[in-house]
Image (cartoon, rainbow, N blue to C red; front, side, top):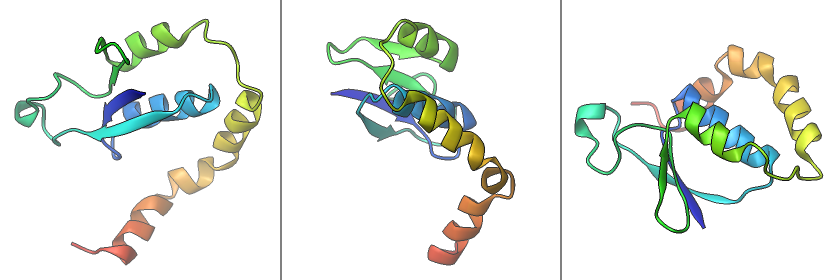
Amino acid sequence: MIALWQAEWCPYSSAVRERLTELGIDFVARQAAPYPEERGEVDQIPTLELEDGTRIEGTRAIFAHLDGTDAWQWEREHRQRYADHAEARESDAPGWILDRAAPL
């Protein structure tokens, strides 16, 4: 299974996760250190690690790799649901929920 080196707070990681979902591609999320100078495992996030160990770094390169992937039957519906939830993303609903679950 492919792995996505990412961070939940990273908007670029979020965009890649959304695109993988739209394409129906299962993946394992691998967490990277928050700051680049602390990341020994990857140079940047997001990084997509393929089953053969090849790593594709950066959103543009990952999207280019995914271009031409056959569409999943739910691709359009997932993109629409993403658009439907724009207000929640803009209002920082995840941040509010996270603060309630585990305030730091």
